[in-house]
View: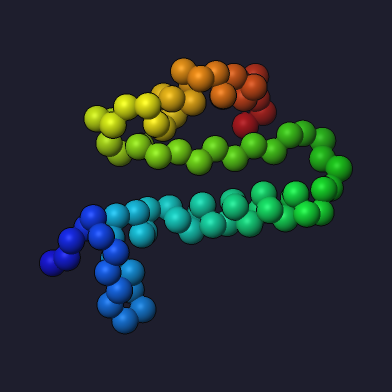
Length: 82
């Protein structure tokens, strides 16, 4: 039993909201984007990473994919490739 809305540390385990929710993927993509920015390789396409919030709680409005769509920020991705 623990409070899921605050971080707690127990040995080598972190517990709290979002501590195991795809953060490995976020870290990996962040490092990839950082490396692309550093190396600046010539690519045949544009690389885009979309990090969202609110994927599991639609009662909080104005964040997440719906907000990106409303703002038109995903329009460039509509024609692919993805």
